[in-house]
Length: 214
Image (tube, rainbow, N blue to C red; front, top):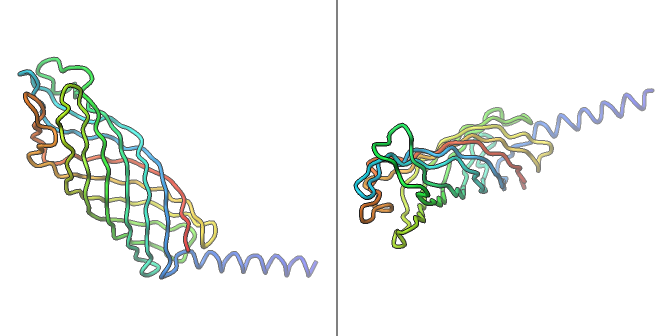
């Protein structure tokens, strides 16, 4: 009986010690993930003298993050995300019937973040992150083969939780918003085609993945 009690006490102490050491200064985190982004509004479009509002559809997003914990509470992160979406007409704003099959839009995000961890001595670690970077917008529109890709300034903000099972492995659940500055957006300009009046394209959604820390 005493041996069992001692063994149980040892396991509890070991578990508590592991739980107190999930985020350590100087460690690196690798975080592959997958999720879903809700498409935003891209602005007003003009095609063959008709006018309608262009949006982008909701689609899966894939990516990865590389983080460095400067302290147990502060982390630098780099992120790459790939979002393949489609143009769609916004039914709330149609002046004339829009064409079908507006085309596709590939977005690649290249971001840097400052991530603030809360409760850095616990297994469940909520965090807030804010950053900036660039989005590469690459349209593919039938009938307009000369549309070029363009790279635009992007802001990012998000938050979530890290759930550590050991000091070296965790699950991560994240919500994130990307807002890309469009300006006059020649990326979708063509003869009688899109010249958006929107200043920002904003996409937001959720993702999940795992963390390997070392």
